[in-house]
Length: 268
Image 1: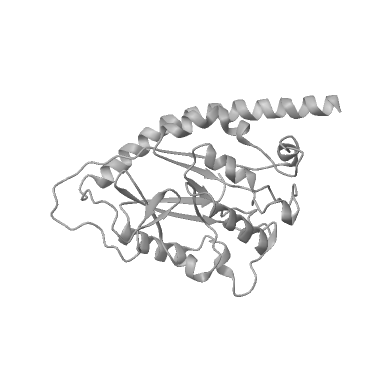
Image 2: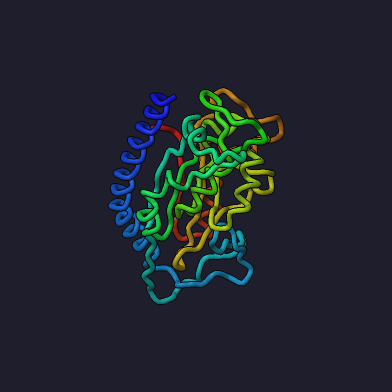
């Protein structure tokens, strides 16, 4: 038992060291994102969120019918700093070493070393590689994962604003895994997700958040589902990479946002 625990702690320390170094690198690239956003917004109108905006993920969400700012307005410079990390892939050793003994989990210490770097930027993204369907569906490891809901709690607490849920592992726990994850994210007001949907109606709505008066259009897509398939008639559950679909989505996002950010889950 002692050797097993030593091995786990060693792996945990190594992972934290790697993640810490990676986030330092991401902080440097955030400046590049800032310049890109500033350039895209330099000719736009500094418009506040409309009265009909919703409040989702801690940011106002524009109604898809809201048109961009009127032409002819004086040039206005707005900036947003952005950081992105991934993959948030939860193996069994991670949740076994963070069980509280009462059936719940606490993963805050995993993200604590990088939290200051994440909180430095205006908008932070994380790729959720494994679906967080919760203990009610039974936790599982490779090759078909299901992670605790508390992973999402820790992600939100660590300062992340946007999470991609469209990965090749998102259907590992079936349709119920996706729905359970979406239900839990609804309870995290500072976190917005893209990539999965509970209904066709939800899938048809563009996701736009407003940060520093800049309208960010968000979308996510994955290359596949590791051999799993969505139930017939429920293809809306996961946003898969499809050229025609992406072109339509981008047209809709362009109509209601200043800058478009897209998570393409296709490997490197």
